[in-house]
Length: 265
Image (cartoon, rainbow, N blue to C red):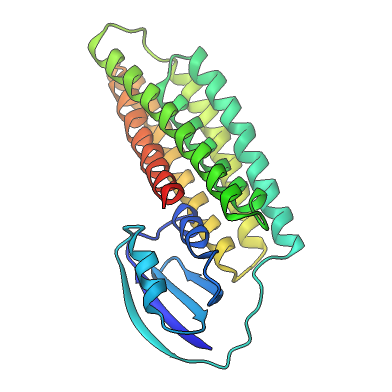
C-alpha cells in the first residue's frame, strides 16, 4: 500500500471535503482518506499509481498539487462511528432549525442579512445531510442528492441576489435592526454550542475537524449580521443589511457551484 500526500489550496471547509470524498468513492485503489483542513493537506492510502487519483482531484479545480508518495505499512481504519454520527445529527438539526427561524424573522423584519444567514444555515445542513444520508449509497444516488442540493442552493442564491438588487434600486422600508441583532445573537449562541459540542468530542477525525472549521465560519457570519444591524441603526440606512446579505449569498452560490460541478463529473 502507498501513502500519497496532496496539497489542496482551496480546501477550507466540509464542502470541499465532501466533494473530494464523493469524487474518490468509486476509486477501488483508494483505501483511506485523511484530511488536514488547517494545513490544506490530503493524505490518501491507496494501491497502484497515484496519477489517476491526482487527475481526478484536478477536475475539482481546488488547486491540488502532489507533495509526496511512499510505501506505507499503516493500518487503515474506517472514519465512521456511532458517536460521531450522533453528534453530526445534533449539529445538523440545530442548523436546520435556525434556518427556519432566521428565514421567518428575516422576512418579517425586512432584513436580507437574516434571510441570507438562514440560507447559509441551510447550506450547512445540506453539507451534513450529504455526509449522513448518502453513506453507503450508490454513486448515482450520491450524485442525485448532490445535484438536487446544488440546484436548490443556486435557486435560493439567485432569488436572494435579485431581491438585494431590487432593494438597492428601489425605496424600501428600513429593516428592524433590533430583530436582526436578537435573532443573530441566538444563531450565534447556537453555532457556539455546536462548536463546543464538536470540540468536546476531541476527535482527530477529518470530518469532525472540518465541521469545527465550518461552524467557526458560521460564527463569523453571525457576528457580521449583528454588526450590520448596529450599523443600520447608527447610519439610519438599509445598505449595511443589503451588503452583508449579498456577501453571504455569494458564499452560498460558491458552495452550490462546487456541488453541481461534482455531480456532473
